[in-house]
Length: 236
Image (cartoon, rainbow, N blue to C red; front, side):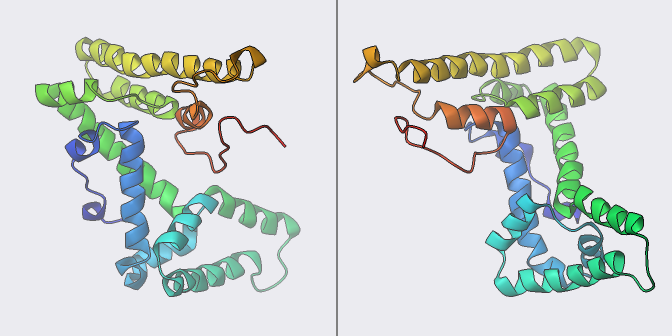
């Protein structure tokens, strides 16, 4: 993945102040990669070799199918299927053990996931540098609505490797505040949602709890749930 394709100014990620900034960072990277893979990259042999070698996970297959034309996705699949055939059904008679290992290796890799991990690490590194050197960005960071649980762990791990001890403590405290305060709010909304199913609260005010289930799943996983229900809808 060419570096200029995924170079995103960190300020552009944090300025909207909507949801988790690191989720926005991932979404922006995925959006650019999906556009790139189904566009100019189809004609670049080095990129095609990598996509054939690594393939795509289910989630990122869905993204390129959504973004690209059906022809562009078919061209990607044409060479990918040819590569899979060589690995799974090579000349001769491979053992079932080797065939199973080849299939398993396919399921462990994804071109998108590996590119995303590399580029995210670079952007997080730049985020921490800005936090250290730019007071305005430090204020912007502190004004984020929250940081989701997976990205909380990610950014803490990165900070421990990059920041000096004196600044690390302040960064950890600020990031814990963003994550912990939202967790408290979210827990209250989920509890209120549950209480609204008590007959004694019939006709009461749902407050901010109507989408508490979706927000909780998003905070825990960093991904929107595929299925949703109306707030007062009962299970089938």
